[in-house]
Amino acid sequence: MDIKKNNFMNKEFINIYNNLVNLSRNKNIYYFFTNKDTFSDRLLIFLFHLAFFFKNYKSKIDRKYMQDLYDFTFRQIELDIREIGYGDQSVNKKMKTYINILYSIIDKIDKWETYRYEEKLRIFNFYIEIKDNKEQFVEYFDKYYIYLSKISLNSLTKSVIEHKF
Image (cartoon, rainbow, N blue to C red):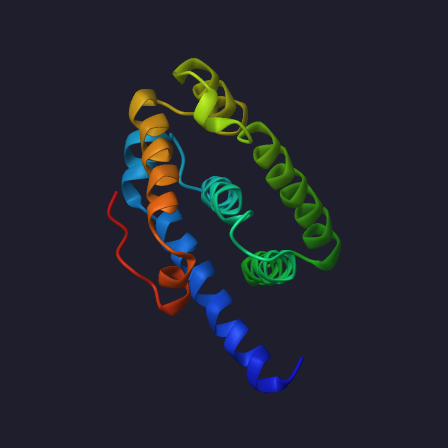
C-alpha cells in the first residue's frame, strides 16, 4: 500500500475510532446506568459500541477494510492501556481478554433485532453491572443500532460528529 493511501486510511480509522470513543464517553451512560466509571467500564461500553458498529457495517464494507479497522482499533486500545501504566505482560493479558470479550459480545448480539427486552438485558448484565434505568440502557443501544443503519460509514470517517439518536 502506498504511503498516501495508508495516511488516508489512518485518518479515516482515527475518525471512526474517535467517534466510537466519543459515544463511549457519554456521561449519561455512566451517571444513569452504572455504579462505576472506571477504565474497564468505559472500555466495555466502547466494545459494545464497536460490536454494534461491526454488526451494522460488516456487509457494507469489504473485509480488508474491516480487518484493517479492527487492527487499528486494537492498536489504539493497547496504546491506551500502556498509557495508564501497565507493563508488557499485563498489557498482553488484558488485550487478549478484551479481544475475547469483543468476540463474545459480537456473538451475543448477532441476532439483536430478534431479541426481546429480557434477552437484551441479560446480555448487558453478563458484562456490565447496570444499577438503574435498565430499560433506558437497552433502549440506548436499540437506538444506537438503528442510528448506525441510517448513517453512512462515510459520515463517520470525515471527523468526529455529534451523534443524535
